Image 1 (cartoon, rainbow, N blue to C red):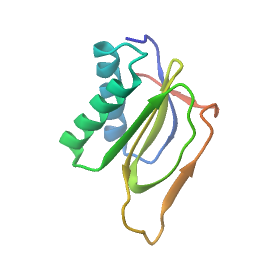
Image 2 (cartoon, one colour; image 1 turned 60 degrees about the vertical axis):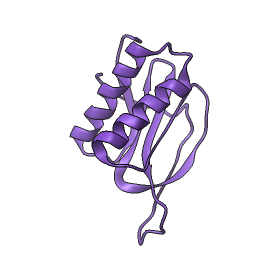
Image 3 (cartoon, rainbow, N blue to C red; image 1 turned 90 degrees about the vertical axis):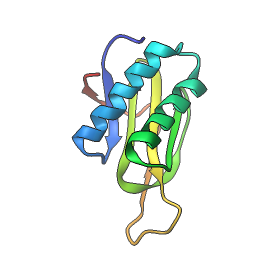
Length: 114
C-alpha cells in the first residue's frame, strides 16, 4: 500500500461517499501493486457498483486527462502518492444542468487523510 494521505482535488460527493472512495482505494492498494492500475480501477468500480448502485466508472493512472459528464453528487478525483484516481457515475441522458468536469492531472490539490 502507498502510505500517506489521499489528496482530494475535486468532488461533489457527500462526505460519507467520499470516505467510501478513499477507503476502497486504500483496500485496492493493499491488494494490488501500484503498477496494476487496471486491477485497482476494476476493484474500486465493482465495489462502488455493489454498494452504491450501478453505472460507476473508474480511471486510475499517473498521467491522464479527462472530460466527463457525471451525475450530480457522484464525482471524485483524488491522488494517493503519484497515483491519480477518478471515480464517477456516468450520465447517459442529458441533464437540465449537466456537470462536465475538466482539470489537468497536475492540478494543485487539497489534503485529505486516507
